[in-house]
Image 1: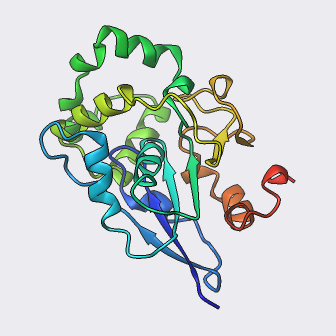
Image 2: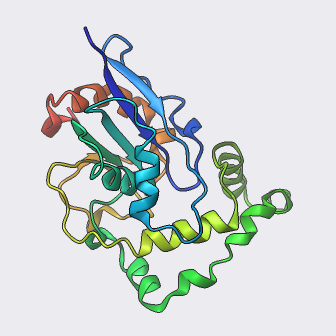
Amino acid sequence: MKKIPVYFMPGMAASPDIFEHIKLPDEVFETHLLHWEMPIGNEPLTDYARRIAAKIKHENPILIGVSFGGIIVQEMATFLNPQKVVIISSVKSNTEFPRRMKMAKMTKLYKIFPTGMAENFDKFKSLPFSDKVKERFTLYEKFFDRREKEYLDWALEKILLWDRSEPDPHIVHIHGDADEVFPCKYIKDFIPVPGGTHIMIINKFRWLNARLPKILLGENEADANS
């Protein structure tokens, strides 16, 4: 049996290690992990997506993207012929952005966001923060490997200025009902993950492992929570 190629794109600045607990049946799927590249200057999102798409070595793959990676795989799909595109903790168009993101776009507040702090991460993680904040620092330290200000400035701008206003009805969207970055009240037509936050690719992997194979094969997508 020929295996189905599945390519995973992590969230903004994240390492492919965020998929370390995602396990698809080896006898059915062949998995590949994509990495973030540094943008070339103020590279348009479509050009960047084309560069990442060039790393796909199979015809008709399945593309899976998390958060900003979900936006990227949707753009990549315009250069490829994927059999399925799955986004997790992401959005299908700019109409699904929360109000604060629309406001940031309108006011250009993203241009003064202190992205340079990420390059000095080690100086902040030792400060006397709460246990919850320290836990988040531990996650960032483990899973985020693109901390360059140039990358972060570029990524924030490209997310907020994403010009897709019409969702592709063929996109399979998996979304947590407790996502704090893209609240589900703004999202339509998705497979809900109970208690899933924006980092559910890490802490809801059991839910995903139990259901993702059937979703990828087009089986019982509407009943994924059963």
